[in-house]
Length: 109
Image (cartoon, rainbow, N blue to C red; front, side, top):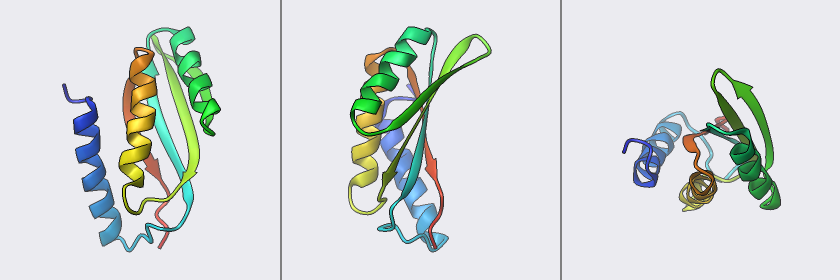
């Protein structure tokens, strides 16, 4: 499955390598944005509530035939932090039947 946790963690390696080539200062705090999709609004809202409990800002909005979850929190991109936060958010999204679409954030150079 292309959207499994292992695939997301491999994407982390590519994202971090790309950021290094752009001169990103990985130990600079910045807001990281996560996106996920759900078929049921209640599942998306339950996942959002779980993320809010962990210190994320999270919102749910409707898009064509499904629900989008956006979650944000200040993070560092050094060390094992990307693996930690992807594992955390992916686990909550998957537990509620959603599909994790990845993360992004500002390059701090």
